[in-house]
Length: 199
Length: 199
DNA sequence: CGTAGTATTGACTATCTTCAATGCCAGTGG
DNA sequence: CCACTGGCATTGAAGATAGTCAATACTACG
Image (cartoon, rainbow over all chains, first blue to last red; front, side, top):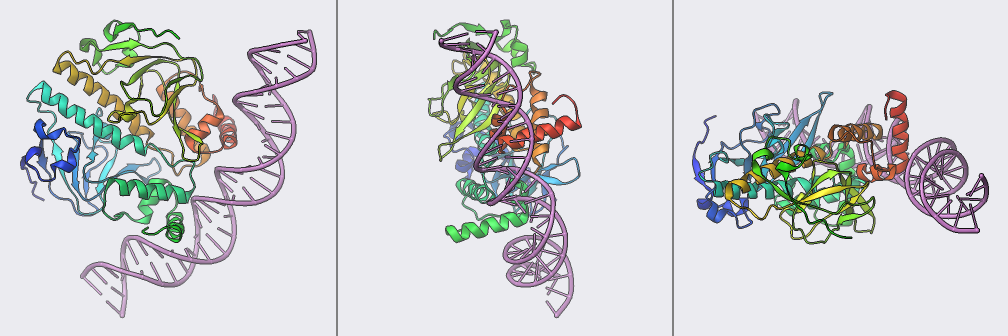
């Protein structure tokens, strides 16, 4: 349970190019703190926890889980390496969703509050805004009004476009995210497998 | 067709409090340019237009429309006064969606690129990030897996929570947004009207 | 080998979509 | 003033789709 409290400059990190690919980081000198690796099923944070800083995913996969009124849970998003966790409640005091690792996962906690100077702060904010807009908008229900098969196909293609790892989540989790029954996900994959290859 | 090219400081604008409510604007001195008012059906911009700056809605209602592969269209979001348009493609060269006024609409174009100093730039970026996160995340399909009636109820409540104007869009547009048939929207409203009041 | 979690399949049912028709209302032109 | 038109709302009936329930297969792991 020890925390790895190592301060790292993204400039010197081998994976930094994946985290800040838009040519922002090299000169920015973003500072992060490496977080203790998570095993599958572990929570990075839970809904209601105080929001302190966003996390940059460096490996693995994390689901954002929303607790429903009736006690059930829904998966709101999947995050893969290079994407930010916790930005959802940037202007909120506490986290609205829980972040649960789907596979073994590593991430870094951003040190965004300690702005050494305004220019660097602006650069970081610009990078965060870019991340936030690219992460949230494409997921703003691009698959409503599509059939179940088309929704699953769109989901798979979206995930493939974001990472090259094989789908790490269960059919039930995909169903929770897409808002359909686990069985329907299974049958959709069956149809896709009959049509194309590689699903 | 004349453009109103009036430069305005949000500090001196009566409606500024609605645009930047989080106590950011008063000292920031955000500059905007008032845009020619739009009539119902007019486009503020279209998918493929070059992205120059986001717009702040000051009155009316705008739909973000996505063109589908098969030629049909889907409504991706509705924007009401105090919300930003165009942030979806912050880091994109061109707009991905078209912005079409549903009712008579006014808006301001942000002058974000002319940063007089880094501190002010950081303040603006912080405000934009707050807007972006609060706008996009709650709409990240909070109503998948709900029944049609519940989806419509959630939609109405969400819209009501963002603005006090009556629903300006047609049943067909609601259906396009929620991914259901116009008739299903109508029947859902009927059920809601029988249950509660005011729908 | 037994267990637990996940994946898959089938049968039945509820819900939603589609198609078709009608009602309602504002704007327009004679 | 009134018929006509177009857009939107509403309703009904029939068919398609996805959800639910239940059972079975598969796989990793102790």
